[in-house]
Image (tube, rainbow, N blue to C red):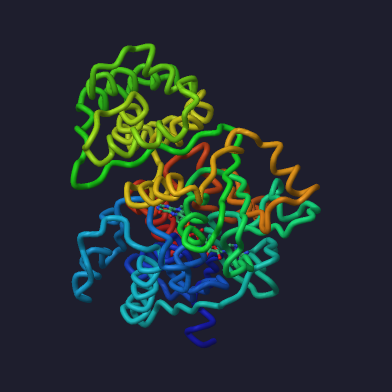
Length: 433
Ligand SMILES: Cc1cc2nc3c(=O)[nH]c(=O)nc-3n(C[C@H](O)[C@H](O)[C@H](O)COP(=O)(O)OP(=O)(O)OC[C@H]3O[C@@H](n4cnc5c(N)ncnc54)[C@H](O)[C@@H]3O)c2cc1C
């Protein structure tokens, strides 16, 4: 038997950030010979979300200071290349180049008993054969699934009949170069990507959503918001359900300004809509840039971001928090919205009339366009819901890490590798069985 036949065969399905982190951890931890195959049709390390070939106008929505890998971090990497290190929300394509470079560096660093290869292939079948697994016909001893965002979801408009062309935005979507009149399903982060892509060429872009609201703007790093005080973070350890978390958020947000309890509670319950979406976005941007006061919504957003890691830790210790899923639906809008740089561009397009909000609260308009026309292109800018299981979730013994676990264990839908330790723990186990 050759040493290669003795090696433990590990399949990693999904070569985005989590697939990369898993490879890095195996390199550090494996003491036995291992043979790792990473399956992904997209570039290894970057994956589909951060593929370097995407439009450079599409930006990161999180401060890039959180982007680290086992041996490097994004800011150090771009500084070594003489890049601009002041831009906290750089293009996703640039972050993807960093992740792809990190992948190459990992291959060079791997010791001889760790063999790694990337197969540019989309896996369609995984089965268990008692002893191990079969992945599209090849045998493996362990399978890690980190397939991230589902690329197509059951409710996607792309699957519906329509008089006007309908497309998604990412993952191989065939986007025309300059459509004039665009209807968009969704008003969240992906809608802003539509605006960044077509804002200079479109005559009009109509967002349509159920809530009729944009997301609250994240603070600029130059004008950081005050920190949540330690007592609120410590109080999270005593939580029994989301009702307790709600009280903590109200208490923490109240310290950020002169807000009434009713105002803050209304934000958390999603009952604070004034009816003027654009004025709300303007106020949110001013608060984020430090040129205007915090609003109740931006204060609650800051409070939730401040205790988010404590909520993750609570879930790790106790399992799903009763009521958290419902609560996080409104908190997502106020806490994890766009950075000032892209929110500013959205407002410019609104003020110049390119983005027209007349259908923002009229979800029926989507069906009207599909049936009667009226736009040149309909873009579905919604993504697969969190916790959509991977196609391989029911194969016994397969380990899944990432967005599919998000609702019972929050903190996976992120580029921040320090929120969870599940990948190092997995690597320790499979690298030293
Ligand atoms: C458009 C978009 C923008 C985002 N922006 C941010 C952001 O700015 N900041 C942030 O923190 N988070 C962002 N996210 C969230 C994102 O989920 C995480 O940042 C991160 O990409 C998660 O990494 P991952 O490796 O778990 O999953 P992914 O990055 O989604 O990688 C999964 C990989 O699995 C591959 N794959 C899927 N199915 C198969 C299969 N059957 N066979 C082989 N390979 C497969 C895919 O091609 C993909 O490359 C964004 C998500 C999207 C969709």
